[in-house]
Length: 262
Image (cartoon, rainbow, N blue to C red):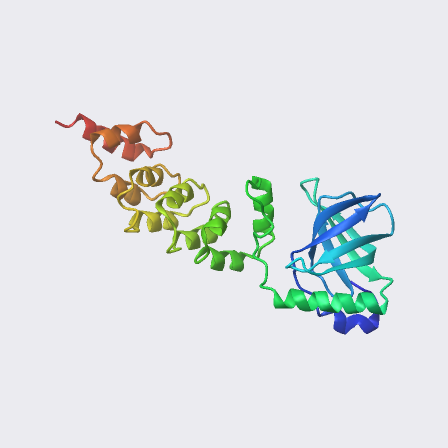
């Protein structure tokens, strides 16, 4: 973040940290997150006022919380997010004496030793849809696709909100996906017909009535798949399905004829 030519080698030492930070503004302290930290500057992200001065005081904390460094930074760039509450402030370190430089080096070493933060580590239980969407949008597509195929329950819950069909397809192939999660996934309007086929053909889910009905009424389901998942429905199931909106008209007619057969 520094504009000094002799800092080129330092600018290369920059990575996403997601570590906690505290920003001081107008006599108040605001908890936030430190991202893209280097030896020359840092990006602070959080719900705090746009800095009113050219420089601010802040504190960075190691991932374990056992080390903190108090620093000052010159405001280089301010960018409020579209949600109207989150602010991103790029800072260049200033007033760096030897003690602060040494403390920063130790902090950077601690960060490098810590496991890299996951894309959803900053989300709290009960996160809003907007917060989840922001976390998804901040994560590269290929990383989301790879994560969806193998990740745990917490991450899968967030990934179900993804709007990219390739991510949802990868999620459908996750071997740990439960039938309850499959039902929730089948409710996504962003699924491709191929992903619906994957859910319909998964042996672990074939006996689940609610999932089969969700697949049958999905707007992107192939007609053959919709007929396949409802082929062995009994009369109570057929009547229940006919009462659901979104059912393909041709399939609706076929199912209705089954109800009139003696």
